Length: 335
Image (cartoon, rainbow, N blue to C red; front, top):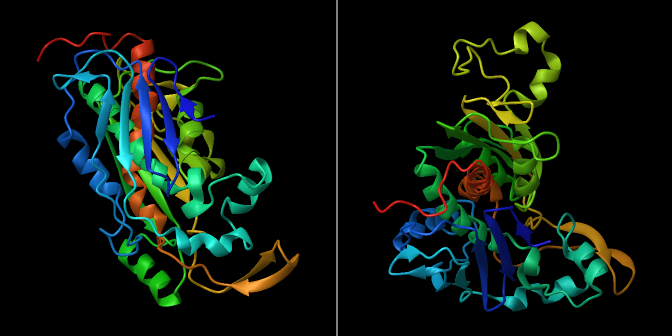
């Protein structure tokens, strides 16, 4: 439920307005250099309040190492990291007990957990928990660098516009939320990673990508556009014995296995459910529909904070495959 991976396995825990959120990483090789500063760049990229259109809620997001690290090196034992929640305003969510937000997990969480769920800030369903994914991704990306593989993601569209600023401004002018597209590319990825049928590279990445709140779709290579192409147009001609192709419509994966070309994938992010606009929805205490507006601190465009999260989950999958293929040793050589 809250764990993912086979050899490189992560478990995340916590709630948006609880004392902390955190993670346990099991299976990380011993000897990996790991410091607090290693996490700063990526946790800053994920933070709210940094970019226009993101929530004003800010947390320090300093990693607190509780196990698995000794003398600034991983020990091979499970790594436990906590991130404290110190900037919460739980009173903003009191009305959500009666009026669950449309498009959010409030209603289904109440149905599944019988009212015992922590509803403050979305509880365990909150995007706040992506800080744990990002932290795991920091470790995974360091492992990928040992085989010279790099992962990078960026926003390619906001509100259907490739001009990200213009797409965001449309939402600001409308006083509403907006979605976007985030693309991830992986360079210098070895061929032969992935297992048919159910552990293909695509299925594993898709599995964890949908753990990112607000994801509505995923595609690899040309994705859905491939349905409009002829076979001759879509097929990637192989240039050499290393598998280099003239085009890359497959996005670096054929038959569920990496082919040595650049891995390319994109995810679709829906508009943030907590829009400031007035909505008409159910009050489950009265059993009637009524008008309400969401209070509190929310992202106008959650896609703005997703690139670093997509990098993290992609790196997690690839690190796991690389360990399974024994491309990364269980004990890293001393630098």
